[in-house]
Amino acid sequence: MAKDLKTMFIRCCGYLQDPHHVASFQKLCGVQGSFPVKLSRKEWENDFFVNGACVKRHQDQSGNGEGHVGRQQIEGPLQRNVTAGEQHNDCSNKLQHETALLSGIGETTEQETVSLEGNRQSSGCRLTGKPSKAVESDRENGDSSERVKPLRRNSLTGDVGQEFIIQNKFLFYLFTFGSELGNEMFFIVFFPFLIWNVDAFVSRRILVVWIWNLFLGQSTKDIVRWTRPASPPVVKVEVFYNSEYSMPSTHAMSGTAIPFSLFLLTYGRWQYPFLFGLSLAICWSFLVCVSRVYMGMHSVLEVITGFLYSLLILAVFQSTLDQIDSFYLTSHHAPLVIVILHVGLGLLAFTLDSWSTSRGDTAQALGTGAGAALASHLNHQLGLLADPPLSSLPLALPPLSAALLARSLLRLLLGVVVLLATRAAMKAATIPLACRVFGLPAGDVRQARQHMEVELSYRYIVYGTVSFSCVCLVPLLFSYLNLS
Image (cartoon, rainbow, N blue to C red; front, side, top):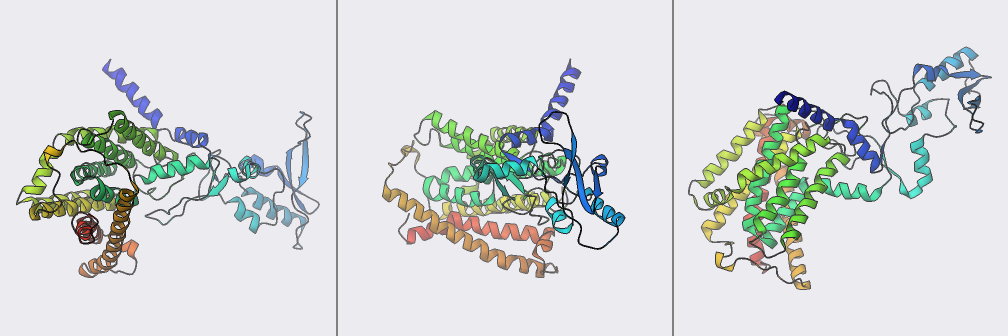
């Protein structure tokens, strides 16, 4: 019985890991790839030369249903004055490498295939027959279809990715937004907004959950070492994280940990309907999880694993958040413990595998957590930004007004500008300084950051300073400007 269950579980995992399910979902959502497909031997042998012109056999489109084979002239006589045999060999070689824009059909290798457009420009033979289905659909739909490339290049290789076709722009923008809910720019806006405009008490605890989710998720990736879904058949709508391992999905983990911990920490502390909070958490998590499949970055199994893994971590830490927060705020040993813990975890993460952006992201989260924890400790010791007294709970949501919205947006805009300026200044100073200290060349920043000494120094100093400014210095600026 146990053996049968194990076999069934393994088969289920294999089924959910199949990249063709990702490709099918992408196709359902209107995403088509532009995969180059090498012509088979039989297909190119059907290309032949007649009367000094390249000719390709094709099915007659007259609709007689008899499968009559006709001829179509592709291009007029070649311009160069050579023998017919030379012309035949040249044209056949060109046609051998012609490719069609298909949606994940056929066998390809990067070394064996050449793009259709490149061959058309370099060859004396140019197909003028019926276009591929993807091209034809793109033309017929007009504005409903659009050829695009990934928004950001690969963070490790600099690869810009392959062009693909979007037939449903609404889903493209929706899932792009959902994917961004797990990226750096979202966090640099979300956490400050929560600290400055909502509840610093809640934000401190969510940061702890988020940091441990990211550390454990990225470390698990480096231990399991599963590669991203194969392309083809999967279309890489995003390539920024394509060089990282993929099991589990840390976007799914962050997209589950943040909304559910926000719900658990605010319900009862703030007055709002239970179903509203729960629905928001579920929709937020669902959008992020599904977006990773749409982007072609994760299989269904990896997203489900990330979701369940995050819930497990949240269940473990939920009961200890009060003790962790109290220790960070009140203990005299807290600063030393915070530094040793967060730096030690970063060193551990860098020993699991060779350099990649996953270790950089882990160090970035740990540096952010260390800076925020140190700033919270300093605020508590100086009596700054005290939490509301327990007697005032539950807190009532203030009525929305133009003045409240303007004040909140002003704090957010001013504060984020300060944080971005801080990050830019610290980044410009830290990487050259670290290279000089450790005796490494600073000419190529990408190459320099692949050294653990530079990357750890950069991530901890820059993002530790940014989070310290967010929790301690920017609120002081708001007090000075009477924006508190």
